[in-house]
Image (cartoon, rainbow, N blue to C red; front, side):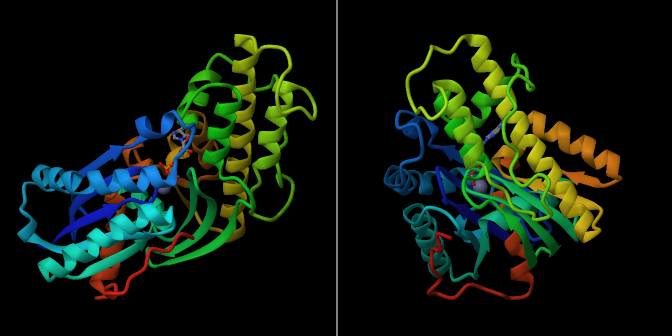
Length: 335
Ligand code: KG4
Ligand code: ZN
């Protein structure tokens, strides 16, 4: 049995995991940096990189301890080397290379976005391919035709903001704090999703792309007045909740409709959803309803496998099987 030690440092979570070639997860440790970035209202790349540098080795130690193995028992190092903040990625990629060299074991590299889909495979405990993959995170909103763990064809993506980014920006407009997704979701519970009629970009078009920047601006103007980016009457609690609920509904409507269109255009009968926004209850409910109606099998991982983690780097096991190892000049690729 080969033990994999996986590293993920693409954004603001320092993560390490241990799993085996049969995809049993023995440890999945995530050190969140939310507290460090909250006062800036968003992730500060240099702060993220330096925090990874401080935390990565302790996080790896923790993962090995939880898995009950020693570093010498590790038979392969896995790393997600793209996409992400380059300074943050460099920390994880450098550590992975150094470990592979020191232990004299293979290094395998994977793509962070594809790994978010693979989290569905891990959670399901069985094959999910071929499927439509929807990744909704802070950095990406993309639809794929996932032929196999090694063959993802992009069907469409956001042309501006990612869905999670829109949640974070709207949270900031509504003074709900950081990170925005969970805050908007909480606020929306007491709001009316039909109170405001916000735009739903490309909804009636065939293209499988997304755009959320117009929606974000519409929320901004609803708060401050048409064309204004500040001022206006103070928000009442009900109006704030209505804005959160109406915004969330617009995002959910678009994501659900586009996932449905992708299923139709590919004639696939499986949908796999990953990324931090997949933790959203309203989105999960809407995707469940749509999938049921279409007779499609839906895979969404539990929360800890939706948000950034290193266990999803198990997508690299498929490469390892083919001896498709990363070269010693492996780069950190931001996009
Ligand atoms: O996948 P992820 O952890 O990191 C990236 O790869 O970007 O996603 C983080 C994003 C953030 O924008 C966060 O606001 C959003 O996921 N998010 C949510 C929820 N939980 C996290 N968005 C909506 N509802 C949630 N419950
Ligand atoms: Zn992510």
